[in-house]
Length: 126
Length: 265
View 1 (cartoon, rainbow over the protein chains, first blue to last red):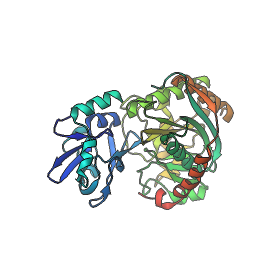
View 2 (view 1 turned 135 degrees about the vertical axis):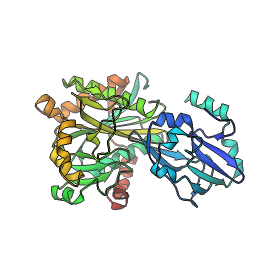
View 3 (view 1 turned 90 degrees about the vertical axis):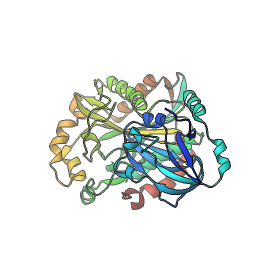
View 4 (view 1 turned 180 degrees about the vertical axis):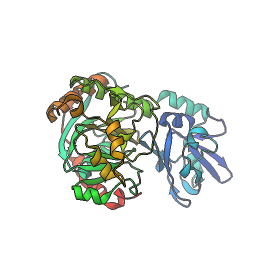
């Protein structure tokens, strides 16, 4: 459940770099732990985000959880479909459930991210 | 699972207004996340009464501010999720603990902490049960209209409503145990009409209804403290707010007392 082409953060987000920007979402492990997501608070396109700092939050089962940016950079796009259908994150966390697109400002930060095997190991240790 | 033998702080804050109550809970979360305090179990009451609403709950259509003012009740938006709770005759608990000490999914932590509430209720002579994992939905503005997974029911009717926030690997969960319940009053302050009162009467109960009386505040705190300590396998040591928590709570009171936060959506 952890696709090999993605980079992962220990804060349970993934990054799929494609050119100079990449989609960000939460992992299957995270959506499973959260339960049914009923609300997503998104940043706006143009906002700056910082690695490991909150860029938004989700509510599931009356629990509000921050979402942490896997890398620093500018938000170039947000997934507006989630406003009306936040449950897409549960159904398709790596596809239609993507949350924002970021243009990374410091590619050296990618070294702080994990590959699929590394992420899988980190959640077992959690 | 919380490990046997850990020490937690027990805070008995007594009565406070909604702004103070929510500011203290957030201060506890931030200071524990910063590693400066023990995990905490806190009890408090609301004076004057207030309606607390969920982090993302819209005010429009779900809160009647004019009627709140007429009743002399406050309004405060919680850091936690969920829906509106009228804190008038209730005991509120909060738990602040790192995810490392209370690990598991959101549902698993509700279940663990509900075990503490169940044990406390049993000490008071009340047999309650946990709602199932998918107890059914609904879109009522009031928290107590709809049981959520692993919340506490008595005779199939909701007795305790809880909500959570997780920030910086730290969990804040707080919840309201109804000592007494007035369905018409809840409908007055949450709904555009008072039709909802019949629904609330059917779905909600209170300690007074179950026991025929409301146990003294001190007995309630004692029973739930013991219930949590037993269920979580921790030792509780009575304590006070730290100086940092006091000054943080004073600063956060500005946020919880203002419309920018309370009427943000």
